[in-house]
Image (tube, rainbow, N blue to C red; front, side):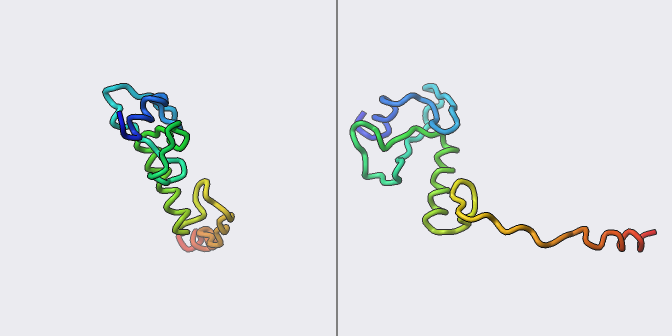
Length: 103
């Protein structure tokens, strides 16, 4: 058990730190180790930079980070810095006129 994944699985519970899904030996391959600071070379022996995440939560965590770093779509989820602009289009604006034409 030399790798950081094996170390994390030994020191942390086999539970996703985000969604709480529990894992057993049969599905343990679906539990990943996430580096909290996104630096895969930062592996302190006390495991303080690791958290066990299921595949889905791990993917979501990296997607949030990628968007935050690139600035792409920065107004989504927990990375939102500004409120999105309100919609200005009203699809029902001339509904009364359209209904008159049908009758």
